[in-house]
Image (cartoon, one colour):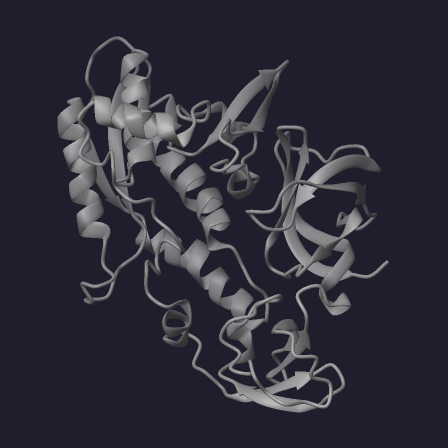
Length: 369
């Protein structure tokens, strides 16, 4: 299985995309003994329109052939279903908006894949994530990727010391443009392949259509905060806080109609009611305080608080200044300097000091000060 070139053994998670391909190439240049691994994490249906695993596997094999390394293919679908997807369904059923990519990183890529690799004698695993790691004394730090548009530390805040010690991120110091250029220079077939979007097991299909297969739709009322019924939805649990599209109430007459677009302000999944407000910056969409639990800390322990830091409550958000408090029950409270819009329970709040990711947790509620 292993090429004997005298280097440390590393297994690279190859997705069939350009990032992991260049990660493998860089490790070879650095003298590592490299093997590729293609993880199948979802048992697709028979709809060829959405099934991309076969294409991705072929692309990963092409990359390995070009680089002259061996490719293993392993099915982690049972672990994914038990440890990621069932949690995903429970969260949606409870009215929250989970982020399965974060849980996939925690439970599959940096746990199941890592354990599998170490058992085979590898010293490290590697991925094409845009993050960096740094050792400070005896502690490993998780740091943002150099390319601010591609930084993926938000999705990796659950990584602890064991995972970081055995993980490599070969492209974290590179901008995406250079990654594509390196792929082109190496003659890799994936150099112009489009970046994957959305949740891995859903692909390009409509999210609501997918979710209805597991959580059947139940029509209910759309109401204003005053209790006026102004429309019907197709299942309150399908919507997220701050959502504008898909409400079907764009031009509607209401006693409170200001002519501005409608946004989801809250939802009651027990009564199957969706509450909406008008205006992108409506006060009902703003939170000064965010409560967070299910905490993970990169160095294993929470910091001393109160701590002035920054946080993100969604991936594409710029860092927001806040004060972090750890409560007696272990829950975190974030007091933001500026109100945060459309904080969605179930999503992740991730904490930073500069480029250093401290950790994060699951949002339970957004509150007014």
